[in-house]
Amino acid sequence: MDLLNAIILGFVQGLTEFLPISSSAHVLIVGRLLGTGDDPGARFTAITQIGTELAVVLFFWRDIVRIIGSWAKSLVGKIPRNDPDARMGWLIIIGSLPIIILGLLFKDQIETTLRNLWITAAMLIVFGILLGIADMVGAKKRRLKNLTYGHGVVFGVAQSLALIPGVSRSGGTITAGLFLGYERRAAARYAFLLAIPAVFGSGLYQVYNAIKDPCLPGATGCVPEVFGPFETLVATVIAFVVGLAVIAFFMSYISKRSFLPFVIYRILLGIALIVMLSTGLLKA
Image (cartoon, rainbow, N blue to C red; front, side, top):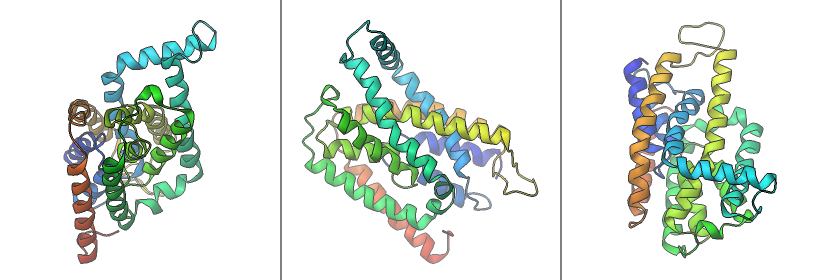
């Protein structure tokens, strides 16, 4: 794959990261359809997600600064530990633990077995249906001020399921929030804040691995990465720019509308993927 394909995948990453349709699934599918049909790889996906997460940091900059400041002050007793922003800091830390633990325990499977497109198709459909059910039956009354530590763990477990392409980081956590009775916007807001430590941790870990143990296109004696450092950097920058626009749209959209269009899209994409796999257009 060349620079043009990296640009396309960076655009796809930015377009789909914040929508509950699974960016990793889209990057995986589009990557297989482009050029030689290679899997772009878990490393490329994790690094380009740094770009979209920088968009989250910029969009929620004031909230993040306030949360970090309040959390730090609560540690030294300058403000009460039950201060809403200080408490949110602890909720983000607690909610991040499941994906860290599961990510380390199942690292090999995440980078290999779980990237099978049959699994991706199933996850697109199953979690699309779950999102639709949650959106219909959820009370949508709770706000972030009602978030408990127990619910934070539930959100965190839901986020960790996004290690499987097809689940969707935002989709999984928002679905859990809706089932717990949170408002759409509140569930999405916490989901995006919760993703910051996990995505930066995963992305920077892959950057470290790329520097420590590079395996570039054309290399011998290892399984080479599809994209080199320059192509990956370009894709990451594009993901940031596109992601910033999408997150603004999405937060405005869910304030007034349901997730039904995303549910329908997920199911149709899952079915289309099954057809492509069954006909040999794509290899699992």
